[in-house]
Structure formats: structure tokens, C-alpha cells
Length: 434
Image (tube, rainbow, N blue to C red; front, top):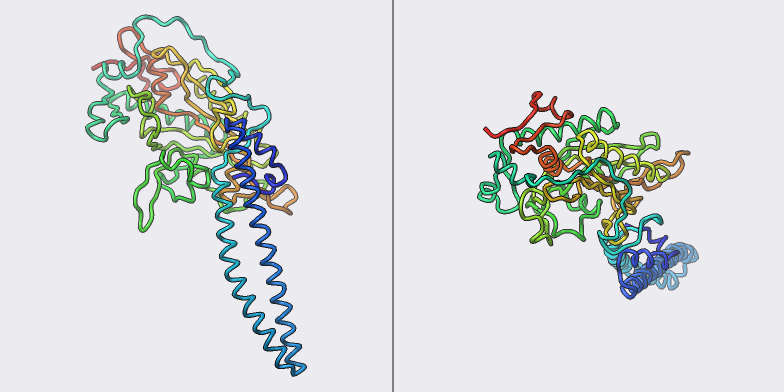
């Protein structure tokens, strides 16, 4: 959520930021004008309430003086005035709550403001390649996509998954199931032992206010799965970013505790609303998948440097696995709702003969912290400031499995196990049909 004080003082800057995110001039301008008007109405109403409370307090004192002077008539008039003011204040407080909600509901669907160095653009075609790692050779004519490899091995079953749960689910068996587990364990070990992240095992279902805290609600409700719980509901996490980031919600963290670096390997659940017809074959786009998430909680001064560090941690996973990849900076029109800047890491998939996203690392500034009321003590210990939050995939386990299968496939249909994963696979060197 954006700072209403900043918006009040910089309405043009907000309008310009919205236009960078592909809003039309008219929509950006009208949205900002409406927001400023709501803020002015709320502030004017709050001022009226304060003045009424001041008059009530003054009149109450005057009642005492009138009674001491035995002026019953004046005392009665003042008592009637206080009674009227009390009713006015009660009604006014209800109106204040309504105005607050109206303003916050408007703020809740506004995207974050991009950093100045984020490239301008409308969509993924305007993203900027930052670096490329690993060589991509010519594609042999025997190369196949991951689902062809997995089905030939008899270890990847989409037909039975559909019988169990419908489309966009997969059943993995045998050594492919073990390989996916090995990938997750390898990533966790790398991030905890070498990169300084603390492993967390969070809940997989969370309250609405937790989803609101990281920006999934209210804007992206259709992308989520919910289950009834008591008189309300719980949402299945679309990413471990949600519970990990919210661990500091409604708390004040000591400056000496920052940065907090957290990681988790969890299932993730997404409805994939709006993706009909995209990646329908295979397991690139699933309703349920595993991902290793990286989350950092920092002070305001450290978040940009932490962003660079985080993307380096995610890239190291692919380097250790020997997978070619490229890192791109997302343009303003392709960047996520809560991000100020995002790097996507795209791994090479020879079966598709293209790069596909395997990690997205974003710095959010204090955008999520304002929604969560998550703060930290400043260096002097005198004031409280909103933390800065960052999140990234370190990396998507299912897509890493796809990348290993396609990059390490052999002409006979077997898959060579990357050296980094062999200790997790009982020193197995190849996955072969049995």
C-alpha cells in the first residue's frame, strides 16, 4: 500500500507511475484526483470531529462553573449542548470509519511505484536482458520436451492425475519423484548453509488478512483457492512468500535483527485464472507445485543491495546444476503489482527451444509493510519505520525438474543426473526406463 501522505504531496508522481504501468492518461489522472478528494474529505471530517470534541470538553468545564455559580439555566443549556455534541461525535466516528475504509479500499488496489531505473515498456517484449550464463548449442533432432521424456520413462502420468484432480496436475513416480525431492533438498541446503537463510516450515493455509498483507487480496482473489474454516475461510498459499513475509506483521523488529532472511520449501496452489490455453501440455503451469521461496526483511537503506544479493542466490542454484539461463529486468508494464523492481531468471529449455521463467525476484520497498503494519526500530532506537520486504523463487522446483530433464536428456531416452544432485539420489548417475 502506498503512503497517502506521499500521494497528497506528490499527486503528479503517482499519476506518472501509473502511466508507466500502462494505465491510460485519463485513468491515471482520474484515479489520483479521486484519491486526493477522498483524502481531503476524510481529513476535513476528522478536523470537524476534533473541533466538536474540543467544544464538548470546554462545555463540560463550563457546566461545572455554572453549577458553582448556581446558574441552573445556563447549566441546563450547556448540558443540552453537550448531549447534542455527544450524538454528533458518535455519528461522526461512524462516518470516519466509513471514510477510512473507502480510502483504504482505493489504496489497496493501487500498484507499487517503480524505481527510476526500471525500463519503460508495455509487456514482456520490452524486458531487458541483464546477463546470460551458459552456452546454448544447436538443438539435435532427437531432443524432446519433458512430458515426452517422462511419459516414455513411465514416471510422469498426466492421464491418471486428471482422473484424480482434473487438468493441470501431474503424478510423478519412481526416480522422477525422487529427482524432484532431491532438487528441493539441494536448494534448501544451498540457501541455508551457504547463503545464510533460515529454513521455515509455515502453514499452507492462511487468513484473508495475511493474503491482504502481501497484496494477493483483494486484487487477485480469483487466482486463489479457499477452504471453509469455522465461520470464515482460509486461503491455500500461492507461494511461501505469503506466510514468510507475514511473520513480521503487526510487530516492531529491532534494527540489530535485520536483515531477516527466510526460506521455505512448500507446495503452492494457484487457480491459474486467465491462463486457459497456455502451457496445457506437461507440468509448466500447474494448480499445485513445489517451490523454494526466499524472503528478506530489511531496513530502508539495505533493500536495493539485498535485491541484487537475492537474485545472485537464485542464480547460483542454476549454476550449480549446470543449466543455461539468462536474467532479465522486467519493464514497468510487465512488473508485478507489489514490486518496485523485478528480475526474472529464465532457464533454457531445449525441448521448447526457448528460455522460460524459473525465478522472479522482487524488491517491494515498504509497500507490503504498510499493509501488514510491520515496522523496525531505527538505528538510534527512537523511531519506528516500515520495514522493506523482498521475495524471490530460489527456485521453482517443478520447473527445475523440467530443465534438468530437458538439458540432461540423452538420445536413448535416459536422463543424466547432474553432479550436484547425485548425493541426494543415492549416487545414481542416470534415470532409465525399467
